[in-house]
Image (cartoon, rainbow, N blue to C red; front, side, top):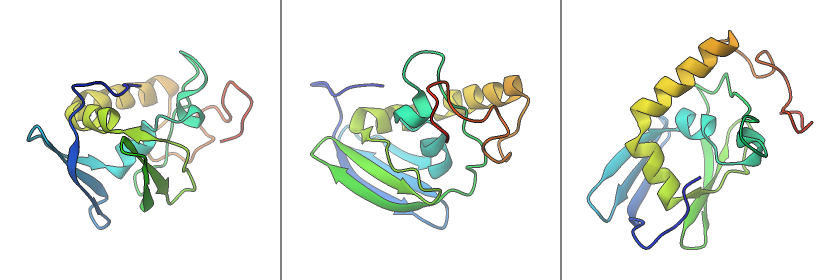
Amino acid sequence: MAGLSATTPQPTAITAHQQSRVLEVSFADGAQFRIPFELMRVYSPSAEVQGHGPGQEVLQTGKREVELNALEPVGNYAVQPVFSDGHSTGIFSWDYLYFLGSQQAELWAKYESRLQAAGTSRDAPMGQAGGGSACGHQH
């Protein structure tokens, strides 16, 4: 996950659009992104999703309709979303939100190829793509 650096653009506005399920983020450098809640949920920086090391990522499925129930500030550097499926452990730094917004096309393509490799689909219920994570947690 990207960390904070001196060049991290600061967000100037963050708006959750519930109907279209996107988080609109404007940054001080002029960049503006509309990040789908699904993309945020699939690429949550939490250990629950990312695992505890390379190759331990837990493929997320069935998140197309996920909603954002809350968006809590974390200091002056991040937000912590609470998703409608109960996931609330991902802390999204400004760098990470910028990364998600600026790399959306590549991230969607990577997600689609991971789904295909796992023989599952974006809308399959969780648990049909391998069950729990490599660290023993049930997700």
